[in-house]
Length: 189
Image 1: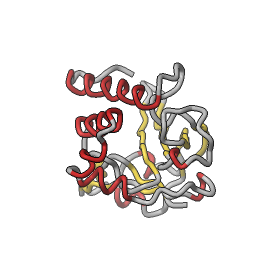
Image 2: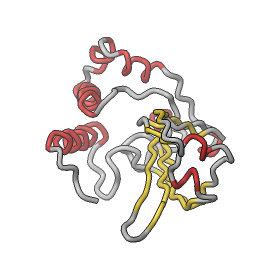
Image 3: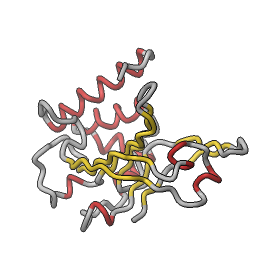
Image 4: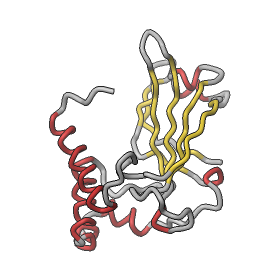
């Protein structure tokens, strides 16, 4: 997948990877966050009312193949499953919409808390830099999103399949009649 044309976005992304390596250590061959996970294939079948809120293919087709990945949140690939540092847990879902004339997909990244420590990449970088430097308390005290994230309960789940997941990003849904709405997906067992 090509990199974005926005140089600031690329620089922020590379800096985020670097600071995550500072926090968790470099683990070649693994992701810098959510390093431990399991990959699954499945089929998504929308509810009968899904097409009323969005004309997206995965809401209007009877079924869409998906790839899903459940994960622990750290960049430590051998973290024990019961370690509370693995919370919140992650869920990434790729809806495979078409293979030709080019590959089309929709990705949803979610985790098991409705909060995220920052509203954008720059503030996420600042949050993780504060963690890496040992100054997280001062950062959290002056950033309400980070405080809500840190204070939210994050119990170790009994099962990935019984956990609720909340999308990190908002998505714009466009209905068949053109009505638009922004949503954050929730995966509820």
